[in-house]
Length: 354
Image (cartoon, rainbow, N blue to C red; front, side, top):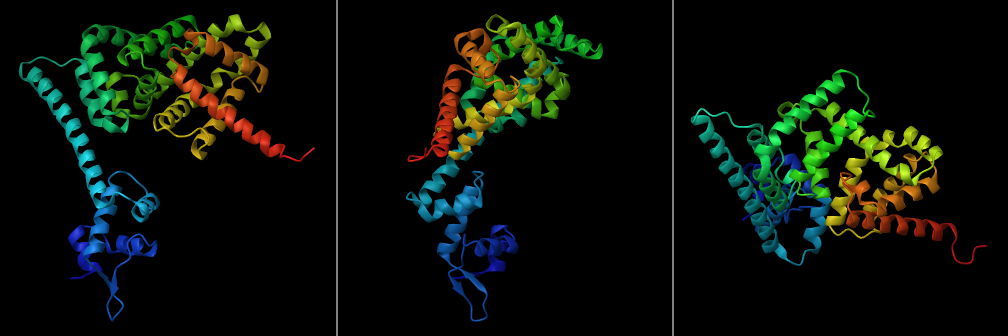
């Protein structure tokens, strides 16, 4: 039995245009053609189409899907298993959200107004899920919040009010008040993340990206940027014992200006590290190059000062707190940069050159 392209499109919910595109790129080539030149799809074609659509649900590109289908050893059973696993994850996430919303509903029916953290957890579950956190990470965050949410809520509200006052009054993020605020804010986020610098950076990214959370917490991107810059000024003071007066003057001019570029870069590098990406992989080489360029920019192009800061960062744990960079990440990106530099040197000085 063969299906013509229109019938296959109707029964699968795809468009004829999509099926033609799959044929054009040799992703799904129909087994037969009618005497009139019409595409005819058989059982094996439909099975391949199922695999294509299942892999699309895993957010793979068409090029990646083609590579998997043309070289896969596991066959269709492996694709089905992956899809079942994905559905299991979605069911667990939906179940966790349902349980939490039932608790919120009970509070509302009892004429009790749920606290900010109750709403925050519900909203995070809807907007975040696997978009920002793994299942284990979501469980960690929930356990941490359940442990001291009530104790944190008043201080979080107080810090938010304090932040708005400082911003409205035009107080510089370099001021002692702003630095104190930022340090306490980061301490709260680290407590929520269980001291995990990687989770801290994901929380930062989520709160930066999601406008719905801005409305709930009262802290928008401008507020997050203010806190981030104040924290950079606070960290800058920690470098003072390792730097000369001249070095510190240069850092004040360049260091904080690079602050906004670091969180997304750190998050990308951590993602590659957790995925087990080799340090000489092209994706990691590009990130290492960006890391090196940004590190040089924050010291005004002074490589010696940059090396000085790197040594201080490695030896002084206080400099790493709240940075999103733990020792494991620092070692990984350090190795990637070293490999990048070794490769560049060998290309500049090939064997036999003088």
